[in-house]
Length: 294
Image 1 (cartoon, rainbow, N blue to C red):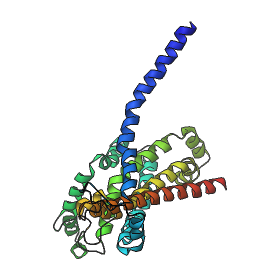
Image 2: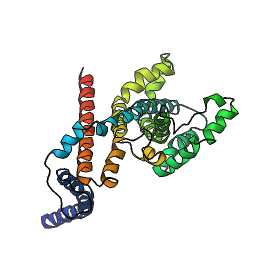
Image 3: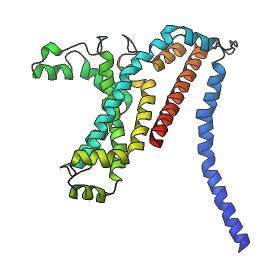
Image 4: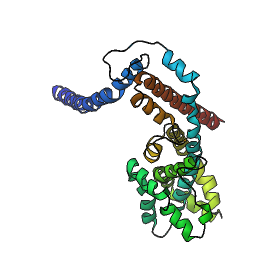
């Protein structure tokens, strides 16, 4: 019996190893090995074509921090940063409302989540038509008699980043909505029933039951949202190509690598962005932990 047990345990370990080997290999091959190579490239002046490159030490990093044009694009991320909180607020509102009894609740859930299922490129082209002159938005404004409010939504520097930030809200709100909805529905319904018996209205239930119960989920979504706002790429790249003041740090990195053939410098920029995202995430976790401890 002991031999059979050992044999069974050995087979189970072998199955676990075999099933884990391929995912781990793919992770190392397509994630960690490219990261290792990118660190190597960041200390060279490789142009992405030549088989040889020269080691330049920390010159690429010094150039990033001493050249204003590389960091000035981070101000574009502020539009997406503020849009993150609007997006989370809308998602939390709809998740709270649809937790209670609402007609056609499943239909509304599907409508709200549907944009997240669409490909980012498709969304970019959809909103290109939505914002273009004489497009959907202009047609609606004309119908409402607001012709004087029509603008060059993607051409006016004062509003083009706002337009794309709203596109980002439309696309990612469904993801936050589903996470919030799942967290709220995990709360025991008896707590709501007891609160209603005590005379608590919906706002009081939200404030004293829902918010404290999903606090960690809210912080998680904030971390994901802010990290995403620092690395925005698809929407501005598809809709404007980063032109007319809409270029983000990621687009700047892509242009540096493939337009100007400075892969070494672009690798350093990518690593700087990675470090910034990690620092922001750790800082948020520290602050939320400290707040929770108090």
